[in-house]
Length: 167
Image 1 (spheres, rainbow, N blue to C red):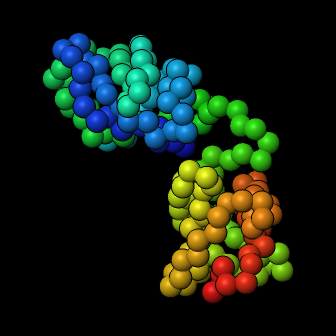
Image 2: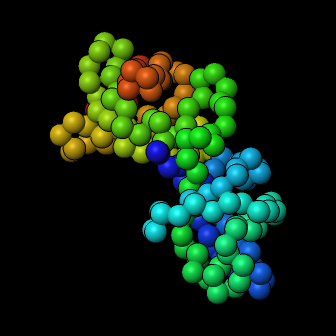
């Protein structure tokens, strides 16, 4: 099973075990679709009882977290979902987790490196590509002008960099 990070517990709220959660998913409304979340240290699955989307955070009530003391123990923990709860994506959309580790080639089939990170910038994401020997990092905007093909199935990304983008 593969886990996808969706939030982090930032604080408690009230005395009944509510958790304040900072959303790490694309949209806070994603929590409305989830049936459960996981913590990994220790690995445990929690059924979601109630979700309240607020302007700056999410209030989350989890089964088994009924007191402020139990909620306090959750502070700082990342919350994850699993592959079974993934939402459907539009064509040409990909989960960031699916891009990490893909091999990157240019349109002439020259190996550039491996995607190590995807940095969201608002307008578009930036692919951080590490060279094979680990000495260079290339940052390529994930836009059609530069990224010609993304194929998690083939485990590759094909880019068409302008001169100077990959040095």
